[in-house]
Image (cartoon, rainbow, N blue to C red; front, side, top):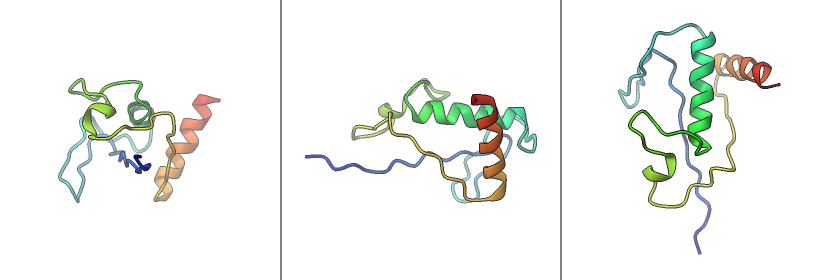
Length: 93
């Protein structure tokens, strides 16, 4: 029997670089504007298994175990993230 495992998909602001991994996001930083909101939307859609990454791979293709794409949650670790979630919610409602 397989036990559920948490899969963490991180959101990297457009045009920024991760201090911990060195990964860099394409685009230009827009201070949480439309570009950032669309990028966050696409990260959520990727985590939900709806769209592939830039290389054509779905989240399930990147994992050696089944990914529960119907169970996606959001976690904000700072004030800017909360603002993005609020803006995203406005566009979804």
